[in-house]
Image 1: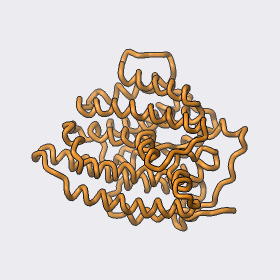
Image 2: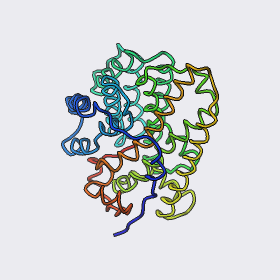
Image 3: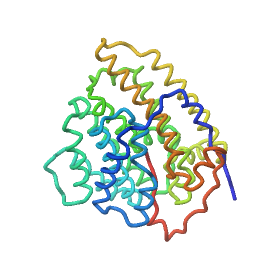
Length: 342
């Protein structure tokens, strides 16, 4: 059986603060009950959904969130999971139609096409917009647009069997991973509303993109085996690196580890050079950047605290970093497969 060794990312993130949200069990259970009440998944998918522990991911990446904010973040990650699962089995045209439902429901509280996805989105929108500031809401809707555009593009690439070059893929991955949407919740959770000039600043965005890319690259190397076994690994940095650099699987994984270290150095350096916008905005910027650190660390921790990627071997993989490649699923089983793009 072929194996590969994961890069050791845990020491790289070990200096970042960690924690678990105190509202995890109660509010997380509420969100799980909410999403399951829509009966979106078949039995096998529901089992995989539960195994993924979306609420645990939120608990580790938003450990500072209050009860209502934590519940809203859980709802959103569950909503993203629904979009991801549905679009993974669709062609570009159908994925775009699915995305339009989400976008229309986010833009217009009166919109209703009668679909389950529309109702789920409207439920989330009501919770989120109740306290989200105007600046962050505007940015969030822009990110929704970009997310759906890139999820649709991913479906088109999958349909065509096309793998992008490295730079084009990085641009696509930043959007279709939904990490910008997850970062977009920071201001809602923290009760702040940063002016656009902060996001127009190059140093702030250096830290922002380094954090986002660390989440994406870690997610891709951890999810690679699961995705390749289901024949949907084209939207994965490991696959892209193997093709772009003409290297094997292990070399690609090693490259992820090296680049992850570079991203962390870039992130720390940018944070140390952050400009000032005045005491009040500076305090909010510091909170926002601390929130990105929780996402970087929480994403890595979650990958080994849930069984999402490595199943019953999760603890063994955490200790040894050795992954046994799972045989590819038969073609007829693909319709019952799942993947993770966040």
